[in-house]
Length: 361
Image 1 (cartoon, rainbow, N blue to C red):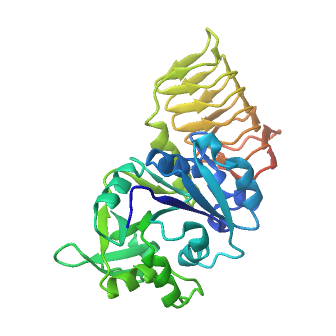
Image 2: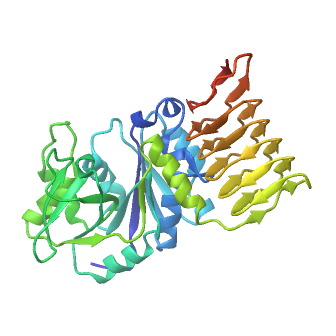
Image 3: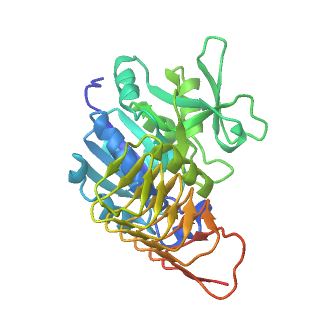
């Protein structure tokens, strides 16, 4: 089979229940890490690996928003096709409904809320060279019962895969990137829904193993982040910000202090404030008499004044002003307003959906 060109399949459906209330009004894959939607990291990783034809699985709830954000793919140098999945029926079901678009071409499946440190180009290159039917990515985790888990035999070959086992026999979790040839479609048609009434990708890959088809395991070096929960988003934000270099394109007055790895985008203004990196300040934001601490991403057109914040993500068009005490470990949605009323609590912690407005007592 010709592996000179692969297609891409990105899963961007699901309801994002673990990210509520933010995902009541926005697709979880469009929540930004370091001011870039998580989904865009996956698209860019595919393009970097030479994949130009990409299909994206979307849900009825968030499909239009994702279509609007990613468009036809031209902004990434790709061609994007969208596939509707009426309900979250499992990863293997997503593979099945993509068959008319993928055809007989080998492909990479990428979960749209995942991040890989080194992208996927080395892995795609390896898959092209290997004579295998499937390549899975694995990483060691401390909580394997929350993931699909792979057991390897004494020779390092895949022996068994189990979805979220209660008593894991391995700490090797499946990373949300897979490479398949056309045999995966046959596998999905052979398996039955799990107890969750979903077609599990682990069962489909196990079918390949049982049929003596070749499944190559690759243990990932470097970090991998699944941004399915708020804590994971903040950790991913910290990890990505650590890779940035100092880049000050906005305006900073002489009374402000900008320290370390700080990105200030065009049109942003820093007035009488302290910015301590790693930090990114989005375009046309205004930071006035404020402290922006390490590992904070401030979206475009935000206003933060007379306030302190660190280790947080603030989405675009939000305003935080006259807040006593430091905001930390918070994920704040779009168009949010946070202000002070008469009483002054000691500390604040926020998880706010889009269009929220909070008055602090």
